[in-house]
Image 1 (cartoon, helix red, strand yellow):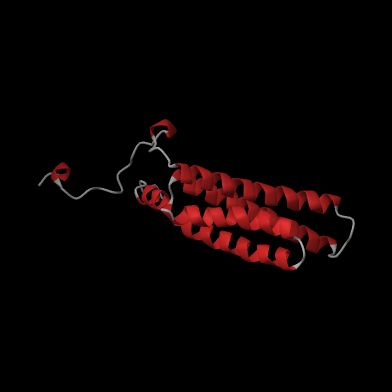
Image 2 (tube, rainbow, N blue to C red):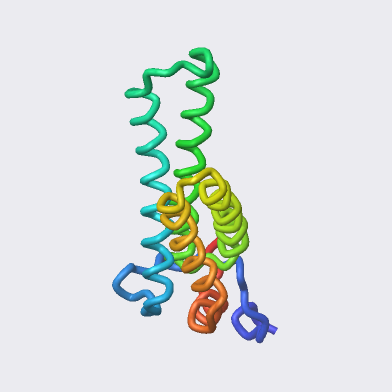
Length: 150
């Protein structure tokens, strides 16, 4: 039997890169999910850096403040990265995005109990919409049909 006659597909064979214009059309839910994750991540990273630069009260020492800013910036970049991975069709990015959004929902309740309901709503609404969009049918179908490129 010749190597080209096999009915078993060769998943390790090199494939040409798929151009962005030739990609499958994304449902609106994936676009909105990407935008939510991207905006949340960029807002978190920007706010962490801005608050560290403009903060007057020193609750932490310099090393603690730098570590906290780095942690927040990394967390923001993870949100942006998860948004891009979902946008590109990586099914494995769905679970970490769900966990991060659940953490944001839990964080929002501290604002409600602390007397800042507007900030709590600003946290919980996008996270709740993102959680909903992660589990609706068009997103699930689109992510499950993605080509394995990992």
